[in-house]
Image 1 (spheres, rainbow, N blue to C red):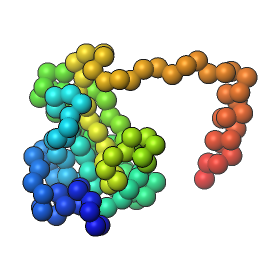
Image 2 (tube, helix red, strand yellow):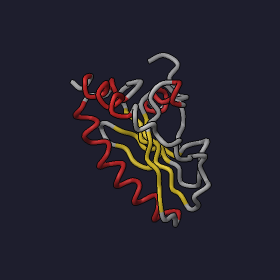
Image 3 (spheres, helix red, strand yellow):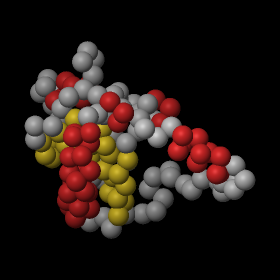
Image 4 (cartoon, rainbow, N blue to C red):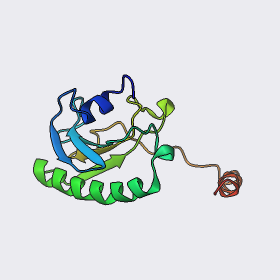
Length: 136
């Protein structure tokens, strides 16, 4: 895929600090980490969002992320971690190649995550219905 930094990394044209790799994934240190030990699980194949990734690849991703998260928190001495995937620019996806973040956490305020506002309980059932109606 033209001009994709993760494809360039996967092909060995751009150096990276790799933690793990197999036939489907490469795991590397994030060069702009949110915390110490922040790693990225990227697919070798180019997919932009989770909706494009084949189910057989996704089925491998979460068990691998679990294994990596355990190694990361033990490695940096963190008691907690976040796993997240940004899908599309509106979600904060900066590199348009599927990747999963594993972020060790030592302090509650390390990431700017905060709870949402309380839901309007009169509208919540209708939102749930629109989601249910679109399940495939």
